[in-house]
Length: 99
Image 1 (cartoon, one colour):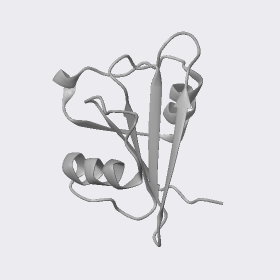
Image 2 (image 1 turned 180 degrees about the horizontal axis):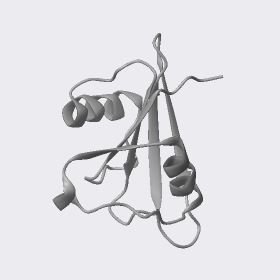
Image 3 (image 1 turned 45 degrees about the vertical axis):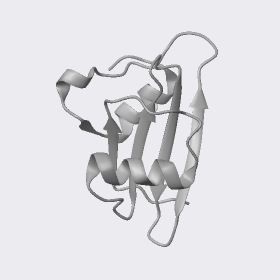
């Protein structure tokens, strides 16, 4: 099981073609560092795809989620470059619900 102590969501879109190294570089640019047991979420500009990078302490996991219809409820850039989420907010976001 992957332990996640904090969940962070970036507000600026990211190119979903990015691989592990590019996503990790983006985490460092936006959040300052990839901290162990933290998840970092990014969406594309249309908010139809989401990439999640999780630092597990000894490596990283990169996963993606795509919605076939609708879009993720993603904040605008004007609200800052990152937001912290709790577990319930992450579950709602992954399901495409508003919170």
